[in-house]
Amino acid sequence: MSALEAWREYLCKACGYIYNERDGDVDSGLAPGTRFEDIPEDWYCPICGVTKADFVLVEEVRVSGVKARTHSVASHPRDGSSLH
Image (tube, rainbow, N blue to C red; front, side, top):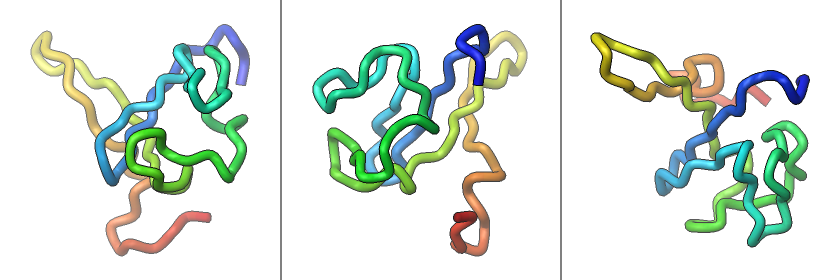
């Protein structure tokens, strides 16, 4: 992914923590600007401790001038199976 592309956010499905690529997670050793795909697989949510696999991409949608957030369908299968 190019550094010129928009920063993305990822939501922890367990506790609601949002990892923002722009901000990183400095307390866990992830510098600002760390893309989610570059985070090591053994990284865990700094709030509740679940793994990277328990995060979903947050997409911002503007509806009638109001910003709403939705989960990426591709990363959250309805049948509960993993895409990995």
